[in-house]
Image (cartoon, rainbow, N blue to C red; front, side, top):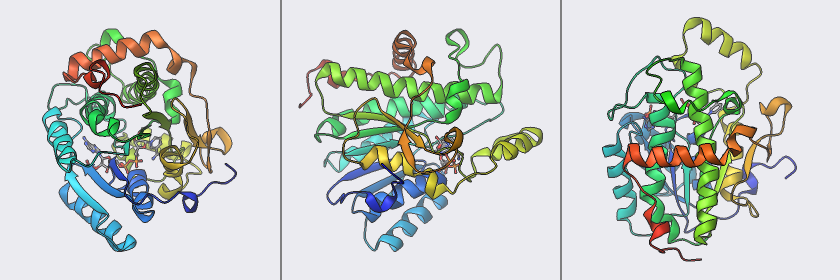
Length: 310
Ligand SMILES: NC(=O)c1ccc[n+]([C@@H]2O[C@H](COP(=O)([O-])OP(=O)(O)OC[C@H]3O[C@@H](n4cnc5c(N)ncnc54)[C@H](OP(=O)(O)O)[C@@H]3O)[C@@H](O)[C@H]2O)c1
Protein backbone atom coordinates (compact mmCIF):
# COMPACT_ATOMS: atom_id res chain seq x y z
CA UNK A 1 0.00 0.00 0.00
CA UNK A 2 2.82 2.40 -0.86
CA UNK A 3 1.69 5.99 -0.18
CA UNK A 4 -1.98 5.13 -0.58
CA UNK A 5 -4.21 8.18 -1.14
CA UNK A 6 -7.93 8.84 -1.40
CA UNK A 7 -7.57 8.80 -5.19
CA UNK A 8 -7.28 5.00 -4.90
CA UNK A 9 -10.68 4.53 -3.27
CA UNK A 10 -12.66 2.24 -5.57
CA UNK A 11 -16.00 3.21 -7.08
CA UNK A 12 -18.62 3.22 -4.30
CA UNK A 13 -21.74 3.87 -6.41
CA UNK A 14 -24.76 2.23 -4.86
CA UNK A 15 -23.07 1.86 -1.46
CA UNK A 16 -24.61 3.22 1.73
CA UNK A 17 -22.36 4.57 4.48
CA UNK A 18 -22.76 6.06 7.95
CA UNK A 19 -19.98 8.16 9.49
CA UNK A 20 -20.38 9.33 13.08
CA UNK A 21 -18.80 12.64 14.09
CA UNK A 22 -18.64 13.68 10.44
CA UNK A 23 -19.42 17.37 10.93
CA UNK A 24 -15.74 18.30 11.26
CA UNK A 25 -12.22 16.96 11.59
CA UNK A 26 -11.30 13.45 10.53
CA UNK A 27 -14.93 12.35 10.16
CA UNK A 28 -15.79 15.16 7.74
CA UNK A 29 -12.91 14.19 5.44
CA UNK A 30 -13.85 10.52 5.71
CA UNK A 31 -17.44 11.26 4.65
CA UNK A 32 -16.33 13.66 1.91
CA UNK A 33 -14.04 11.13 0.20
CA UNK A 34 -16.62 8.35 0.45
CA UNK A 35 -19.20 10.62 -1.20
CA UNK A 36 -16.71 11.71 -3.85
CA UNK A 37 -16.45 8.07 -4.93
CA UNK A 38 -20.23 7.72 -5.18
CA UNK A 39 -21.35 6.47 -1.75
CA UNK A 40 -24.52 7.78 -0.16
CA UNK A 41 -23.37 9.01 3.24
CA UNK A 42 -25.35 9.71 6.39
CA UNK A 43 -23.51 11.98 8.81
CA UNK A 44 -24.37 11.71 12.50
CA UNK A 45 -23.48 14.28 15.17
CA UNK A 46 -25.10 16.58 17.72
CA UNK A 47 -24.86 20.16 16.47
CA UNK A 48 -27.44 20.73 13.72
CA UNK A 49 -25.77 23.83 12.28
CA UNK A 50 -22.37 22.14 11.94
CA UNK A 51 -23.89 18.88 10.70
CA UNK A 52 -26.09 20.41 8.03
CA UNK A 53 -23.26 22.69 6.87
CA UNK A 54 -20.97 19.65 6.52
CA UNK A 55 -23.57 17.74 4.50
CA UNK A 56 -24.14 20.80 2.29
CA UNK A 57 -20.39 21.17 1.74
CA UNK A 58 -20.11 17.51 0.75
CA UNK A 59 -23.05 17.82 -1.65
CA UNK A 60 -21.53 20.97 -3.18
CA UNK A 61 -18.06 19.40 -3.57
CA UNK A 62 -19.33 16.11 -4.95
CA UNK A 63 -22.15 17.55 -7.04
CA UNK A 64 -24.89 15.21 -5.89
CA UNK A 65 -27.46 14.38 -3.24
CA UNK A 66 -24.81 12.16 -1.70
CA UNK A 67 -24.84 13.38 1.89
CA UNK A 68 -27.45 13.91 4.56
CA UNK A 69 -27.10 14.80 8.24
CA UNK A 70 -29.19 13.14 10.95
CA UNK A 71 -29.04 14.09 14.63
CA UNK A 72 -27.02 11.70 16.77
CA UNK A 73 -25.88 12.04 20.36
CA UNK A 74 -23.70 9.06 21.17
CA UNK A 75 -24.07 10.01 24.81
CA UNK A 76 -27.83 9.42 24.76
CA UNK A 77 -29.06 5.90 24.01
CA UNK A 78 -32.49 7.20 23.02
CA UNK A 79 -30.84 9.41 20.40
CA UNK A 80 -28.70 6.49 19.19
CA UNK A 81 -31.91 4.47 18.80
CA UNK A 82 -33.66 7.23 16.81
CA UNK A 83 -30.61 7.65 14.57
CA UNK A 84 -30.42 3.90 13.90
CA UNK A 85 -34.15 3.90 13.08
CA UNK A 86 -33.63 6.81 10.68
CA UNK A 87 -30.83 4.95 8.91
CA UNK A 88 -32.79 1.68 8.83
CA UNK A 89 -35.94 3.41 7.53
CA UNK A 90 -34.40 3.62 4.06
CA UNK A 91 -34.54 -0.22 4.17
CA UNK A 92 -31.71 -0.33 1.72
CA UNK A 93 -29.00 -2.05 3.75
CA UNK A 94 -25.78 -0.55 5.04
CA UNK A 95 -22.37 -1.25 3.49
CA UNK A 96 -20.19 0.79 5.77
CA UNK A 97 -20.31 2.10 9.34
CA UNK A 98 -17.43 4.32 10.49
CA UNK A 99 -17.49 4.67 14.28
CA UNK A 100 -15.51 7.91 14.34
CA UNK A 101 -17.21 10.49 16.59
CA UNK A 102 -15.50 11.22 19.85
CA UNK A 103 -14.51 13.49 22.69
CA UNK A 104 -11.20 13.78 24.50
CA UNK A 105 -9.89 14.76 27.91
CA UNK A 106 -13.12 16.12 29.37
CA UNK A 107 -13.45 16.91 33.04
CA UNK A 108 -15.65 14.21 34.56
CA UNK A 109 -19.17 14.53 33.16
CA UNK A 110 -22.05 12.13 32.73
CA UNK A 111 -24.02 11.24 29.62
CA UNK A 112 -27.82 11.38 29.53
CA UNK A 113 -27.78 7.74 30.65
CA UNK A 114 -25.43 8.40 33.57
CA UNK A 115 -22.23 6.99 32.02
CA UNK A 116 -18.88 8.73 32.30
CA UNK A 117 -18.90 10.79 29.12
CA UNK A 118 -15.71 9.67 27.36
CA UNK A 119 -16.47 5.98 27.91
CA UNK A 120 -20.15 6.59 27.13
CA UNK A 121 -19.65 8.53 23.88
CA UNK A 122 -16.49 6.95 22.49
CA UNK A 123 -17.29 3.33 23.32
CA UNK A 124 -20.82 2.63 24.60
CA UNK A 125 -22.59 4.84 22.04
CA UNK A 126 -20.77 3.12 19.20
CA UNK A 127 -21.34 -0.33 20.72
CA UNK A 128 -25.09 0.37 20.80
CA UNK A 129 -25.15 1.92 17.33
CA UNK A 130 -23.30 -1.02 15.78
CA UNK A 131 -25.63 -3.50 17.47
CA UNK A 132 -28.74 -1.63 16.34
CA UNK A 133 -27.48 -1.37 12.75
CA UNK A 134 -26.29 -5.00 12.64
CA UNK A 135 -29.31 -6.29 10.65
CA UNK A 136 -28.70 -3.55 8.02
CA UNK A 137 -25.00 -4.45 7.87
CA UNK A 138 -25.65 -8.17 7.64
CA UNK A 139 -28.03 -7.61 4.74
CA UNK A 140 -25.10 -6.42 2.59
CA UNK A 141 -22.43 -9.05 1.86
CA UNK A 142 -18.95 -7.87 2.79
CA UNK A 143 -20.17 -4.81 4.71
CA UNK A 144 -17.52 -3.17 6.91
CA UNK A 145 -17.45 -1.60 10.36
CA UNK A 146 -14.44 0.64 10.97
CA UNK A 147 -13.92 1.69 14.57
CA UNK A 148 -11.66 4.69 15.05
CA UNK A 149 -9.25 4.54 17.95
CA UNK A 150 -6.13 6.51 18.86
CA UNK A 151 -2.44 5.67 19.12
CA UNK A 152 -3.03 6.57 22.78
CA UNK A 153 -4.93 3.31 23.25
CA UNK A 154 -1.45 1.95 23.93
CA UNK A 155 -1.49 3.76 27.29
CA UNK A 156 -5.00 2.49 28.02
CA UNK A 157 -5.94 0.13 30.86
CA UNK A 158 -9.42 -1.25 31.45
CA UNK A 159 -10.42 -0.60 35.05
CA UNK A 160 -13.41 -2.93 35.18
CA UNK A 161 -13.95 -2.24 38.88
CA UNK A 162 -14.32 1.47 38.20
CA UNK A 163 -15.19 1.79 34.51
CA UNK A 164 -16.92 5.13 35.01
CA UNK A 165 -14.12 6.68 37.05
CA UNK A 166 -16.32 7.11 40.14
CA UNK A 167 -13.51 6.42 42.59
CA UNK A 168 -10.61 7.78 40.60
CA UNK A 169 -10.88 9.96 37.51
CA UNK A 170 -8.26 11.38 35.20
CA UNK A 171 -9.35 12.94 31.95
CA UNK A 172 -6.52 11.35 29.92
CA UNK A 173 -6.84 8.08 31.74
CA UNK A 174 -10.54 7.98 30.83
CA UNK A 175 -9.74 8.87 27.21
CA UNK A 176 -7.08 6.16 26.78
CA UNK A 177 -9.38 3.61 28.43
CA UNK A 178 -12.18 4.52 26.00
CA UNK A 179 -9.81 4.23 23.02
CA UNK A 180 -8.56 0.83 24.23
CA UNK A 181 -12.24 -0.15 24.55
CA UNK A 182 -12.68 0.81 20.86
CA UNK A 183 -10.02 -1.72 19.83
CA UNK A 184 -11.20 -4.45 22.21
CA UNK A 185 -14.72 -3.99 20.81
CA UNK A 186 -13.65 -4.07 17.15
CA UNK A 187 -11.56 -7.22 17.60
CA UNK A 188 -14.26 -8.98 19.63
CA UNK A 189 -16.82 -8.04 16.96
CA UNK A 190 -14.53 -9.64 14.39
CA UNK A 191 -14.34 -12.84 16.44
CA UNK A 192 -18.13 -12.96 16.86
CA UNK A 193 -18.71 -12.29 13.15
CA UNK A 194 -16.34 -15.12 12.29
CA UNK A 195 -18.03 -17.50 14.72
CA UNK A 196 -21.41 -16.64 13.19
CA UNK A 197 -20.10 -17.30 9.68
CA UNK A 198 -20.85 -13.77 8.47
CA UNK A 199 -18.85 -11.81 5.89
CA UNK A 200 -18.98 -8.55 7.85
CA UNK A 201 -15.49 -7.04 8.24
CA UNK A 202 -14.67 -5.32 11.53
CA UNK A 203 -11.46 -3.30 11.29
CA UNK A 204 -9.68 -0.65 13.35
CA UNK A 205 -8.12 2.66 12.26
CA UNK A 206 -6.40 5.58 13.94
CA UNK A 207 -5.56 8.94 12.37
CA UNK A 208 -2.16 9.52 13.95
CA UNK A 209 -2.00 13.09 15.16
CA UNK A 210 -4.28 15.33 13.14
CA UNK A 211 -5.00 19.05 13.46
CA UNK A 212 -8.64 19.10 14.57
CA UNK A 213 -10.67 20.57 17.40
CA UNK A 214 -10.43 17.37 19.46
CA UNK A 215 -8.02 18.73 22.07
CA UNK A 216 -10.29 21.70 22.81
CA UNK A 217 -11.22 20.30 26.21
CA UNK A 218 -7.79 19.89 27.77
CA UNK A 219 -6.80 22.20 30.61
CA UNK A 220 -4.32 24.94 29.73
CA UNK A 221 -1.30 22.97 30.94
CA UNK A 222 -2.51 19.83 29.29
CA UNK A 223 -3.27 21.91 26.18
CA UNK A 224 0.36 22.99 26.07
CA UNK A 225 1.53 19.40 26.49
CA UNK A 226 -0.88 18.25 23.82
CA UNK A 227 0.37 21.00 21.50
CA UNK A 228 3.98 19.91 22.05
CA UNK A 229 3.13 16.26 21.55
CA UNK A 230 1.23 17.24 18.44
CA UNK A 231 4.21 18.71 16.65
CA UNK A 232 4.23 18.00 13.82
CA UNK A 233 0.62 17.09 13.24
CA UNK A 234 -0.91 16.27 9.89
CA UNK A 235 -4.06 17.59 8.25
CA UNK A 236 -7.48 16.16 9.07
CA UNK A 237 -7.64 14.97 5.44
CA UNK A 238 -4.47 12.90 5.94
CA UNK A 239 -5.81 11.70 9.29
CA UNK A 240 -8.86 10.30 7.48
CA UNK A 241 -6.77 8.04 5.20
CA UNK A 242 -6.40 5.07 7.61
CA UNK A 243 -10.20 5.01 8.11
CA UNK A 244 -10.75 5.31 4.36
CA UNK A 245 -8.28 2.52 3.65
CA UNK A 246 -9.90 0.22 6.23
CA UNK A 247 -13.33 1.11 4.84
CA UNK A 248 -12.71 0.71 1.14
CA UNK A 249 -9.42 -0.86 0.09
CA UNK A 250 -9.72 -4.30 -1.48
CA UNK A 251 -8.27 -7.09 0.61
CA UNK A 252 -8.87 -5.63 4.07
CA UNK A 253 -9.63 -8.51 6.43
CA UNK A 254 -11.57 -8.50 9.67
CA UNK A 255 -9.43 -7.87 12.74
CA UNK A 256 -6.87 -5.76 10.87
CA UNK A 257 -5.78 -2.33 12.05
CA UNK A 258 -4.46 0.69 10.17
CA UNK A 259 -2.63 3.88 11.05
CA UNK A 260 -0.10 6.29 9.51
CA UNK A 261 3.22 4.87 8.33
CA UNK A 262 5.46 7.65 9.71
CA UNK A 263 7.49 7.88 12.92
CA UNK A 264 5.54 6.56 15.91
CA UNK A 265 2.43 6.29 13.69
CA UNK A 266 1.90 10.04 14.08
CA UNK A 267 1.61 11.01 10.45
CA UNK A 268 1.85 9.63 6.96
CA UNK A 269 0.01 7.33 4.63
CA UNK A 270 -1.97 4.33 5.84
CA UNK A 271 -0.26 1.10 6.72
CA UNK A 272 -1.19 -2.02 8.66
CA UNK A 273 -0.37 -1.60 12.34
CA UNK A 274 -0.41 -3.89 15.34
CA UNK A 275 -2.45 -2.60 18.27
CA UNK A 276 -1.09 -2.86 21.81
CA UNK A 277 -0.89 -6.28 23.48
CA UNK A 278 -3.73 -5.43 25.91
CA UNK A 279 -6.07 -4.98 22.90
CA UNK A 280 -5.71 -8.72 22.22
CA UNK A 281 -6.81 -9.72 25.73
CA UNK A 282 -9.79 -11.94 24.89
CA UNK A 283 -10.97 -12.22 28.48
CA UNK A 284 -11.07 -8.43 28.78
CA UNK A 285 -12.81 -8.15 25.40
CA UNK A 286 -15.54 -10.59 26.44
CA UNK A 287 -15.98 -8.87 29.78
CA UNK A 288 -16.25 -5.47 28.08
CA UNK A 289 -18.76 -6.85 25.58
CA UNK A 290 -20.96 -8.34 28.30
CA UNK A 291 -20.81 -5.18 30.41
CA UNK A 292 -21.60 -3.08 27.33
CA UNK A 293 -24.65 -5.23 26.58
CA UNK A 294 -25.76 -4.86 30.17
CA UNK A 295 -25.23 -1.10 30.27
CA UNK A 296 -26.78 -0.28 26.88
CA UNK A 297 -29.43 -3.00 26.73
CA UNK A 298 -28.32 -3.67 23.14
CA UNK A 299 -27.63 -7.27 22.21
CA UNK A 300 -26.21 -8.39 18.90
CA UNK A 301 -28.97 -10.96 18.69
CA UNK A 302 -28.87 -11.35 14.89
CA UNK A 303 -25.76 -13.46 15.48
CA UNK A 304 -27.69 -15.79 17.81
CA UNK A 305 -30.86 -15.93 15.71
CA UNK A 306 -28.94 -17.22 12.71
CA UNK A 307 -29.91 -14.21 10.57
CA UNK A 308 -26.53 -14.31 8.98
CA UNK A 309 -26.11 -14.64 5.26
CA UNK A 310 -22.63 -15.92 4.47
N1 LIG B 1 -7.27 14.47 15.92
C1 LIG B 1 -6.40 13.60 16.37
O1 LIG B 1 -5.17 13.85 16.41
C2 LIG B 1 -6.84 12.24 16.80
C3 LIG B 1 -5.88 11.37 17.29
C4 LIG B 1 -6.25 10.09 17.66
C5 LIG B 1 -7.57 9.69 17.55
N2 LIG B 1 -8.50 10.56 17.09
C6 LIG B 1 -9.89 10.07 17.00
O2 LIG B 1 -10.45 10.47 15.77
C7 LIG B 1 -11.87 10.63 15.92
C8 LIG B 1 -12.28 11.97 15.34
O3 LIG B 1 -11.61 12.98 16.06
P1 LIG B 1 -11.36 14.46 15.48
O4 LIG B 1 -9.97 14.82 15.84
O5 LIG B 1 -11.82 14.55 14.07
O6 LIG B 1 -12.34 15.28 16.45
P2 LIG B 1 -13.20 16.62 16.22
O7 LIG B 1 -12.65 17.44 15.12
O8 LIG B 1 -13.35 17.20 17.58
O9 LIG B 1 -14.61 16.03 15.74
C9 LIG B 1 -15.39 15.26 16.62
C10 LIG B 1 -16.71 14.92 15.96
O10 LIG B 1 -17.45 14.09 16.86
C11 LIG B 1 -18.73 14.66 17.06
N3 LIG B 1 -19.19 14.35 18.41
C12 LIG B 1 -18.68 14.76 19.60
N4 LIG B 1 -19.45 14.31 20.61
C13 LIG B 1 -20.46 13.59 20.04
C14 LIG B 1 -21.59 12.90 20.55
N5 LIG B 1 -21.87 12.87 21.87
N6 LIG B 1 -22.43 12.29 19.68
C15 LIG B 1 -22.19 12.34 18.36
N7 LIG B 1 -21.15 12.97 17.81
C16 LIG B 1 -20.29 13.60 18.66
C17 LIG B 1 -18.55 16.16 16.82
O11 LIG B 1 -19.76 16.80 16.44
P3 LIG B 1 -20.78 17.47 17.54
O12 LIG B 1 -19.93 18.19 18.52
O13 LIG B 1 -21.71 18.33 16.75
O14 LIG B 1 -21.51 16.30 18.14
C18 LIG B 1 -17.58 16.13 15.66
O15 LIG B 1 -18.27 15.92 14.45
C19 LIG B 1 -12.14 10.46 17.41
O16 LIG B 1 -12.64 9.16 17.65
C20 LIG B 1 -10.79 10.64 18.07
O17 LIG B 1 -10.68 9.93 19.28
C21 LIG B 1 -8.18 11.81 16.72
